[in-house]
Image 1: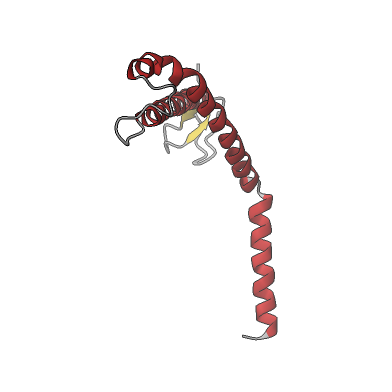
Image 2: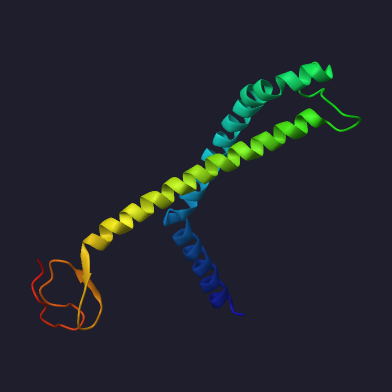
Length: 145
């Protein structure tokens, strides 16, 4: 490999890397990771400090443990285990609700897009609803009501 071809390969790599970074995907991903981490800490604290003690307080007192961390059955840390299960369920529920909301929004958006288009009766291409001539097959279209 000559000096010239290795320099070209290096500049090609740098250009590809710049394109990757500049397109914004890397920034979107970084923001998502940071926001996800912060959101996870808030949810974890809410569950650990508010929800779990409220739910498990009667069981902790009945077992004679002073707090969640000391609630043990033999060597098993039952309190922490149940707390982690509750955390998982709440986070899974929040993610499910977010995904469900996004899917609903996407369906609504698709309905709006579908209302703006129609199908050419000759070539079956999707065209704007106000079109009087198909942009694909150039057929004159019947007027739409």
